[in-house]
Amino acid sequence: MFDTFSLVHVAAYLGAGLAVGISSIGAGIGEGYIAGNANIAMMKQPKSNDILLRTMLIAQAITETGAIFALVIAMLLLFGGSIVPEAGWQRIASLFAAGLVMGAGCLGTGLGIGYAGGQACKGIGRQPRESKVLTANMLIGQALSETSAIFALVIAMLLLYSTPDGNSIVKSCAFIGAAFAMGFGTFGPGFGIGIVAGKTVDGISRFPKQSSVLVRTMFVGAAVSESTSIYALVIAFLLLFVA
Image (cartoon, rainbow, N blue to C red; front, side):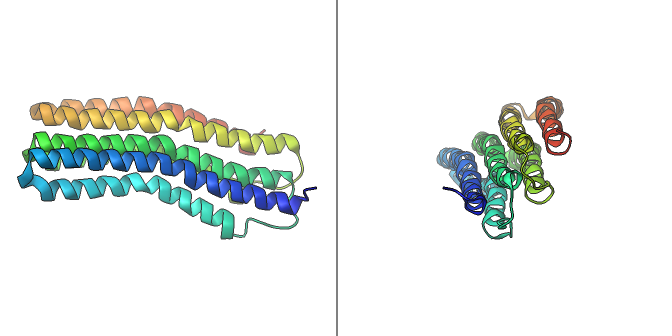
């Protein structure tokens, strides 16, 4: 009933939908959280509206990057020459897996980056004079959180362009397993690092003189949290090229 060429189309279309659909959940919620906190802060500090608007837009732009990564993968799945008539089961699995890993890989980071941005806006509403320090540390924390989505992007690109074709069911399952490992393995670190960054800027707004201690603790906490996504990355590589 289904020939392999039709299944290649199905896998690419499902992968594209998963990539954009799942990633948009995290990005949309994160951006809304930022805007909501910016609005509240503007009511508290009307004279700082320009600073808050700028911080809000910067934070939302960074939160959007995961969804942009997913959009790129979706476009490559649809128009990047991935759909070929001679494809086997491994190609079918790799196309589906590329979309899955990119979508799931951006969910936690979107939420985490959005939380950090929202807390920065809230902090500026509390301490407008510390806006530069708060924005700088927000950006650092968001960058740390974004690394998990970049790991997912790497695996997605490898699935699209560096995996061998064939009809091995075992290898096909290994590709999907790599997507599960990296996609879901990024949720905790991406969201967790965002929480660390958000609490750091919140603490700086409350206790500005303790900023150096808070930032140092943020780096240590983020590094420990990031280790789990590195575990997922290692397993994903093993499933792609060793299994």
